[in-house]
Length: 167
Image 1 (cartoon, rainbow, N blue to C red):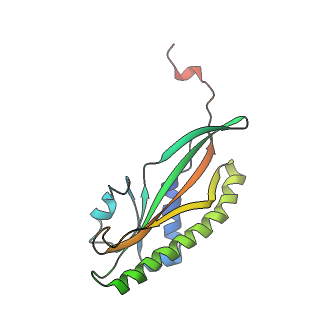
Image 2 (image 1 turned 30 degrees about the vertical axis):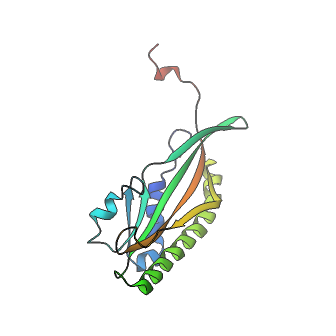
Image 3 (image 1 turned 90 degrees about the vertical axis):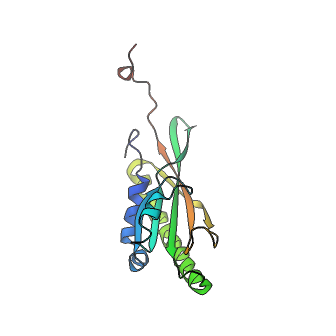
């Protein structure tokens, strides 16, 4: 990463999914979506896969000046979804707890990684406040889980470059 090429949240959370023992034990499938209303990879793979780490490929973002530099702040949304036996609330509760545990484990890894990114390229992964929301019983029939949102602030190069302009 540098001040022009930004943190690849999609690759980061896919990597967490592939390295997490609980996610692997429960066959969580990394995929993408474009928000809660467009879980296309989940729906396309719903018959083949039973659990998903779905990374939103769109970001809310802002650019702000901090001190003498400019930073781009982006919010990443990650859905942890798992299927349960339809109309079996005990199984639903057990599967939701798996999602809670994976979220906790992801959060602990993100705390560790925060310091690596700060040292490497001065990007700041906000791990002190991560919003999470559990999904209701009727979100997708036979599927439960949660989603969480985290921010990263990265230096961005906003110096004017005349070579990028005609005139």
